[in-house]
Image (tube, rainbow, N blue to C red; front, top):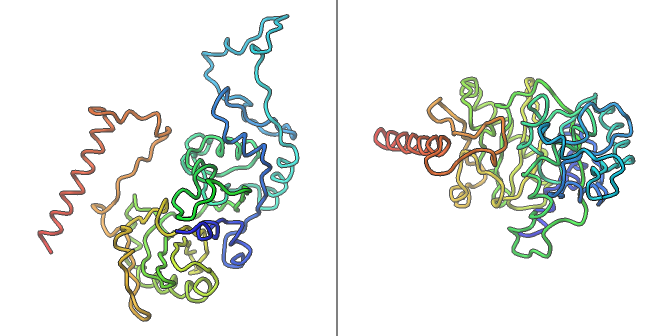
Length: 336
């Protein structure tokens, strides 16, 4: 994989070209001080000071039992005992407030490549829905996923010259409360040919997909041929789409081939060996029964808070899940 292939998948690079078939998005360049704020991992967790005064989130995230640690004795002259001042990014906040309003009052935030999906647990709604600058800052600052964008974006590149891009962007995408997770799909393009399509949400079984599978495949293949094939420059890549109730296909994202991109219901070995010729059928995989659901760690706490050591409850859960998958595989082979 080359750096240029990874860079090509940044939303600020592809969105303008595919705007007419994508989700409405407004993009802002992030000032370096804000990027450094997202990277800070020492000291108290401070949310930016809001210039609007409308944000209800606390400016400091801390344990109430440790309140006394932040109290300063009257007349104390030791600056090390003073509580840290919340950072402030008034110009960025003002632009973001305007964008949120222009996008209908609620947005989903993401950086160059990734959205902070792993920090949804910390929001009041348990989703990535944001209505203010503070909510966005909280999700971004709490995400481990975004560390990849911030520090390791080019680690898988054979011609790596740096670990991160010179500039970061915040993309604010219009929030749609009625989106159905089962209607998002990941498409795999090998040597500029669409070789595979996978259900994006693999932790659930959706019976309705069985009836729609053929029609969905035709819609996605036509979309690829009409809007993506000749317009995205990479030979190998993936792209995500969402199919609306009325049969329109919306481009959600582009991702590099391999590396940190999940192959979902495929394996990269299978996809790397794909040799489909023009005119052949694309392999379209969905979860076709409850037994085929992939286990996932959907919890309301960060992964770091889970005890996965040997003998723990989560360790046993993971062992049981692996054993169940092996049983299903043996049963399938026996019946084949």
